[in-house]
Length: 451
Image (tube, rainbow, N blue to C red; front, side, top):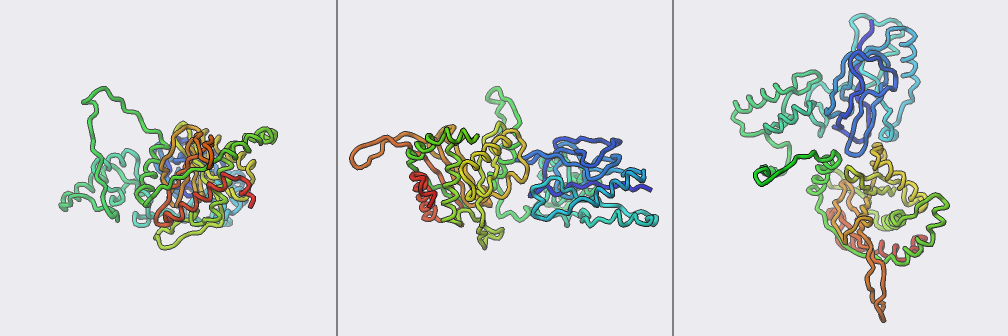
């Protein structure tokens, strides 16, 4: 007797509630091992989830627009009934290497083995060993759902709940896998009204933000509603959280990079022979890495309770990249250990992947400090928002030729505006000024990077 098996969403790195943008199979389809089942899209990456098993799809548990987290059911399938096929599938699963926790975030192929439902009859000899799989089962009640996880409900139900002001974490689902249905929301509202409760309580929030006013702009003239790009929609809530969760201050400074630009121009042809386009940004990254070695607090992070500081022995820099759908921040690793040419190559590759929407979860994780450069666009200064849990971010604007007094005359010099935003809980003003002062010295005399 062949038992249907659930395929669960594997570990996809430090992500949860990732939206399904494409369902690639339907009931009745025959799938093979590693065949793509669904496509997920987070705020920074798109990924296809392959099947860990071969067989016939019995049912699909997800639809376009659903939000999934690790361990959520994707579909149910029936493994092949033929002995050779079943043996081949068992051998493939047994041969799969066991991954360590350090490897998991960077790999999308780490699919957990499916949970096997027990059969009424006793298994044949050897069958139990093939089916044995130490996989944690999905929580059986809402109380077991991890903190921060969204309840299991479709986008339509979530929208319906928002319209009624219902907190779905307080609603018990009656659908399959405790999925919350529209009738569950309606029943919850009826019970709440019967108890005389004016509104559901806030889940531990220290205060309630007032709702934004709804204005009918059509009264004033012609209007058109267009959807906000997905990356901006997701990053917008993240930026709002960053803004209200950390007291941020911005320190502005400038650096005279006239000599640096002369040096960069002199090395342009040599870099081209190495297949590298030598821009200013890789040099800035190297200078920032040098300054962070002297001021490790600026690449640290606060623990969740705000009581301790996590000092990092690595220097991974996030670099904001402008794409047609919004800003994304790939992370360049070990900047302090690489040469400028190597950094230029990695930055070019990461920027291309970002613009093509091909960044993987591992490409955007692990940063300890961020650089946002608007020099190629314009502006004189701005206040970048700290990418919490990082504690600082550097913004640079377009350089400008300005007259500088050298004691005798005003001479034209190329001046770079710098804006350092920092979390005031960790960094005070004096430390921020010393950091930008050191960075200015490194940029004004590039030879100091060798010291």
